Amino acid sequence: MNLSLRNTLTGLALAGGLWACGPAPKPAELVSYEQMRQGDYAQTVQERHPDLFAEAQKYYRRALEAHDDGEDERTLHNTRLATMTWRTAVALSQTKDAADSLRAADARLQRATEALADADQRRKAAEDAIARQRRINEMQAKLDAANQRAAQKQQATDAKTAVEGAAAKVQLAETMGGGTHAPGPLNKAQASLKMALAAFDKADYAEAARVAGLTAADADVAIAAAKPFYEAEEKRKAYDLELKKMLEATADVPGAEARVERRGLVVSLRSLFAAGKSSLDPDVTAPLRMLATIAKDHADFRLIIEGHTDNRGRSQRNLELSEKRAQAVTNYMAGEGVANDRMTALGKGDAEPIADNSTRQGRETNRRVDIVYLRPVVPDPQAAPAPVQ
Amino acid sequence: MRAITSLVVAVLLGALAAPAGAKDSKDPKAAIERYTEAAEAFDARDARKQVANEIGTLRAWLGEARAYLKTGDDDELAATLQRASVMVRLIDALQRRAEAETKAREAHAAADEKERAAATARNTAYELEQQLAAMEEQGRKPK
Image 1 (cartoon, rainbow over the protein chains, first blue to last red):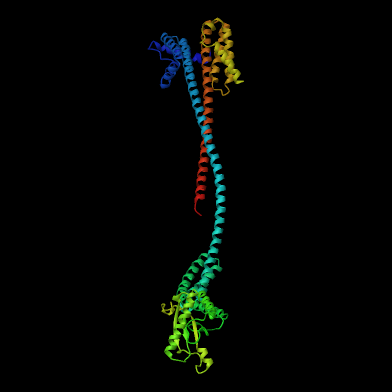
Image 2 (cartoon, rainbow over the protein chains, first blue to last red):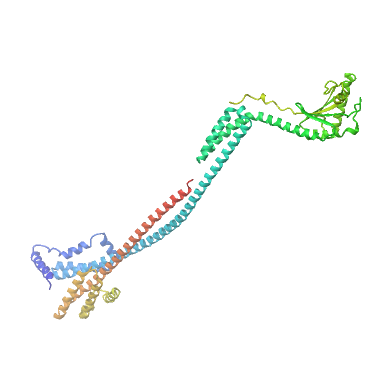
């Protein structure tokens, strides 16, 4: 018999001694069993393991009976059996709880594993995308840099073009006489052109282009003001040049004497008519054909065909004869294709001699037909507004 | 080793399926031997000494049973073997519970670890996605 059992029996003996004074108190282990049976979880254990519960209760009832009978050892024995059986039921129930917990943990693990796989997949996808995006951004940066260089180059090209264009306009304005007709704008244009060139030299292309635009605008004003004068002058020069060429062309015309006067090219022909006659001699029309060709080649020039006589005979008759002769030449020229509305026939009679009528040679000189290629009238730019300041 | 001892206990418990009764009384010596083997097997399984007290009690009762066997005190022997039988069943249940709870704790710990890893991976993925969004935004910015 061990010590604890002896102590228990001693306690039971003492309790038995006191029994005469009243019901013996339940042993601590029996009370402990009853306390173990309390609570919600005890109900769960009872439902899960009804056989063990019934067995424990059987031992418990025996313990109570033994206690009531005052049989302490039997009480303790059955109490222990009840307690162990109940603890067995509790342990089995908790084993089931643990198994449930294990399943829950497995489910968590499964979910976490899937979540980890998903996250890893997202991470991998993001890493791949980042790598791609990094390459894209690097390429974009290179492209941007190239575009920027190209833009700078283009800007320089544009600025160069603008400055060159402005310089050309300034030069044109100067050539056209802008200094006379639009000194203010031209001076501004010249000054701003210097600024544009300076900006270009400093590689400040935006500023160069901007100032070149102002230069061009001022130069345009100067050009616009000077242009009518310039064009008129150019036209006059062109006509002078044309007259010179026409004069050269008349060198091949037989019997023609040509000279350039203020009104234009004057070609004098003699011996076209028999004395006192106004009909053309068919043998002498070759010069007229050539002069008609010159007239057709220079369509801007109107023609005045003037008939002249010497001073022999009556002036009125001379006038009428000269008119007829001028008309005959005009008709011939028209027949050669010169438009009638370009030509005017005039009889001058003996009113405009070019040589001395007292001599035979002088009279021969005065008997002539003058074909005048009139210098075209250039509009007078003086009618334009006053010079721009 | 653990599997073998579990198998031994299972075999023993098969023999002890019902609490001891008439069977143990017929051959108490054999019963004492079976329970002694069971105590050894329980002890071998109890690396963490979770049921050391119960095993100690079982062994003490088996010692008492041997003493009763020698003295021929059959009633005490039967009662002691009955308690030993119920204790064997209890210890087995406690060990099963302990093992199940250990497995559950380990499984939860593994799940905790996996969940932490998943959370870390999610955070990493999120940060990378944010980085990607920033890079894409950077790429879209007009230069």
